[in-house]
Length: 196
Image 1: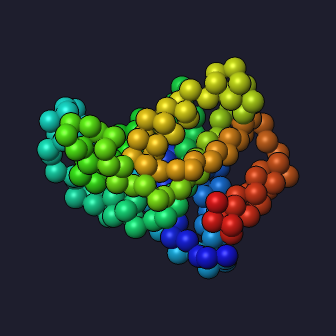
Image 2 (image 1 turned 180 degrees about the horizontal axis):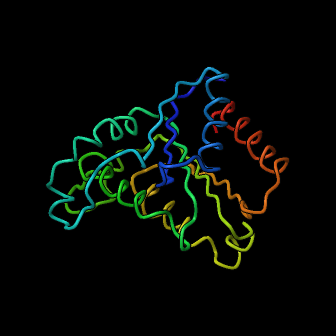
């Protein structure tokens, strides 16, 4: 297996305590490193950046210096793994704000002749999105139709050329016992080893 350049993007916004998202990311990282993959990690909770408030700023403003290294890591990687908890049916606002900042014109895509789909600058990269939630994963996927996840995949990752995108949905996390948690950690460690 050819080693990959992998970016782990931790989207849990709480930096005050470890959460299951962090344990899952650590398991994935351990598997990836053991298999010889190159690894970089970005933890959004530790970054200080403003929210975008205008189209003008997004198109013509400067990327905050605090996000330069994170944006460079996105450009460097061949595979990105995004971890976040489902909050009010969506990704946490901090992660959305981060993605809005780094996925700027000129980096994530280039418009040609006014067509924003003309050049997807992050093509050639794949992704896995790992989402934890309190509800059963099947309820989120089939009753709620995983609407926020599909929006991330289509309107952000797919828009800039990232494909294929795979999903790992982990439900009922508050009710898990240690054996169930360990099963998920083992699964993420194996995915890290495979670079998927």
